[in-house]
Length: 134
Image (cartoon, rainbow, N blue to C red; front, side, top):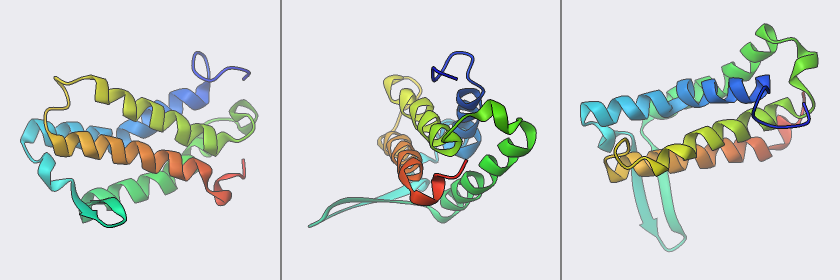
C-alpha cells in the first residue's frame, strides 16, 4: 500500500488492535465508574510517571504480543507490506489518541490519562528494534 489508512488492511487491523488492546476496557471503565482503577500517576523530580493497574497492564501486554501474530495468520503476508508491525502500532496509537477529542466519551481525568498513556505505549512499541521484522 502506498497510503496509510483508506483501503489499507494494516490500518483496519490497527483499529481493531486499539479496541481489544485497551480502548474497550477504558470505555467500559468510564461507563462503570471505575476509570480511577486503570492507572496510577506519580509526579516526581523526573516528571510524570504513569503506571497501568496490574489487570489492565496484563490485558495490554498479552494483546500487543498475540495480536500481531494473529494478524500474520489471518492476513496474507504479501498484503501487509513492509514494516507491518510498526504500521500496526502507529495505527493503533492514532486510533486511540483520537478518542481524546470526545469530551462526552472521556469523562474523567484518569480515563484521559489512560488513553494518552496507551497511545504513547503503542508509539513506543512501534519504535522498538525488535518490532522491525515483518
